[in-house]
Length: 588
Ligand code: ARG
Image 1 (spheres, rainbow, N blue to C red):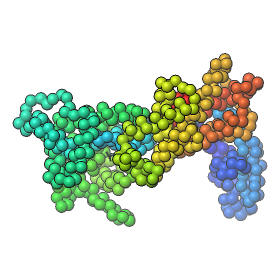
Image 2 (image 1 turned 30 degrees about the horizontal axis):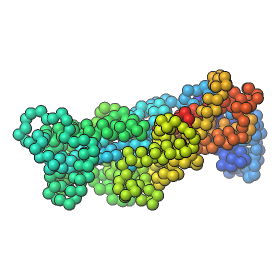
Image 3 (image 1 turned 120 degrees about the vertical axis):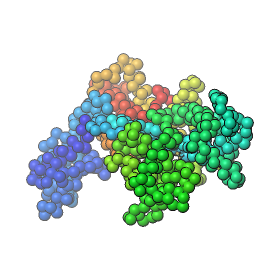
Image 4 (image 1 turned 90 degrees about the horizontal axis):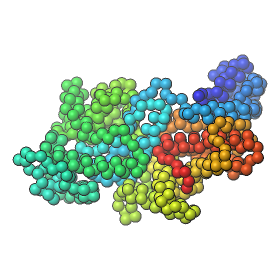
């Protein structure tokens, strides 16, 4: 289905031409004075210079042509030369009827689908998921769903951190605590135990303990670095222990991401890139891209036009150990080989921006990546508490994601039970959905790159620009539709008719803008565009709802038309929230 703005534009182009002016001047935009008109065209102002004529005269000429169009109900030229446009009700209801009949709600699937890898989540095994990982999961999931909805082949990869110093730290700490385990016996030749020597909660205690110790004890840190090196170079006992760490930790991560309704297509890890490292390093040396700098192997990535210092990209440390950079570059090699992507989008904390600049430049310079593969960095800001500092627990510690979710669930449960008598079990399930909407919408409604304040009271409110408000609106619509059906009405077949009021026309206009919001969110990698669209749509719906007695309407045809309008509004809202990564309950 063609975008409504394109249809309107075509009319304007035709009118300019018919009036004897250059058609390209006929560009229409959404009105910035919705009190006066719905769309506007400022082409006559630009034409004035070109044709050396007063803009209002040109506007009048064009208006005379536009009046012949089937699209507009009202066309006016206003001084000094603006053209104000209002759509014909017939045109509008016709467009919405097409949308009703379109299973993709007017969205055209990509004619040439791209393969897009979205690198998000980025949790580190053996470290508990904390709120810092929340944004990556939420934003990445939405970016993936939007791309998929537009028909692209999207591949979401969690890219777990499992290959760095944290693994050496854990191995070292376990060794100190249980030195007799076979993993640490170099002579051991038997099979290693199947059971992990720790549970997830033990593991989560081991890492911070080891990390703390390494900061105070230089010898301990040295040991951990040595263990990391040995792990990366195939020490069998360490590898066996590392497998246990992965198994225990990934099971827990799957549960946590599941609760967030975040689903990865790939559960790849930094270590999966390991087999690609030796050849990649050799290639970089052979081609003369990499050189030694104080024992470390580096690739220079600075460019003449840089205004700030971009340090070289380090490929191997002087002891030969690989780094975060190494695995990221080798992962690019792997992804190219396995998926030949057109695009890779990294959804990572914006504090890693410089790092990704180095990695991207290095990948380009060394031609690890095909020339036409785009590497994009979507850096997000920090989630802060009400004090403006990074979000913490009340005690000042790092907030575990699990605990945050539980806290918001409880808050929503309390609100739901307070609002009305509800079955406690159902209320629990509803609370989960509403809590998720509060967290995700609260995050996604901000432009990703900005820091934002995680304000529990605001995010969980049923009023204002919040997830629960959107869900409340959807549930309200569902309840009207259910009542209509219970009284024998059918949702099938009814067509959206002509707008009977201003509030109805506004709602209809807003519905036609669905595709604009989605395409924009995709092109700009900006889920917040969908949030602001559905917030406007929900407001328009609620205004219409408060002014219109739908179910008690006596004219059955009119009633059926409104019901059809509600059903379309519901579909647009539910499709949109699905793209944001949450869903609505039946009741709340
Ligand atoms: N594990 C990393 C962290 O916690 C994030 C990974 C981001 N993705 C990547 N390809 N580097 O900071």
